[in-house]
Length: 193
Image 1 (spheres, rainbow, N blue to C red):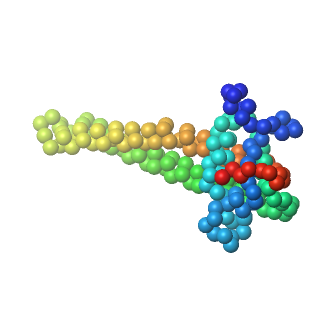
Image 2: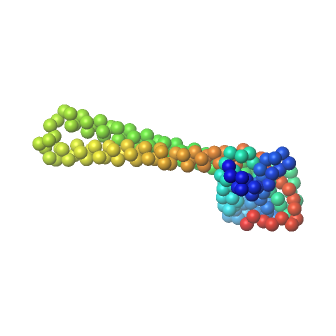
């Protein structure tokens, strides 16, 4: 990890990197869409989520904690509810990511299987029938070979190109869902928004 990136973050008393987030009150951490839902069920603010994700990606594998600095004092029960809501939110993103990984894996396996079947059928047709004299059958056999390779290519490309970014995103969500969150009060705190 490049040292100049790590220098942007404060270290706590234990030497762990701290992602500091300042807000005037706890409700600033949440989306305003549903004002009456409890914090545990509300969506986190989009800018906050993006900031946390970008920070964790910057820190790569370094251990970290998240420190919320509010200008209003909080209670332990409120802090507990906020922690639970953040863990639930990133847990939900983990589940969504898992479904996306499985959907991508399923479609890749189907495409690879379909490509292998078409390639096998094409080889069988070419070996068992004399397609050199039959123009239409020859074109169909060659079309089957092309379709087979396209299907195999799409399946492999999906695995090789889409799998790694989804796994990296999964690691970020996992780190945020299991992170340590702390709270402090500073009446002069500037908000993150």
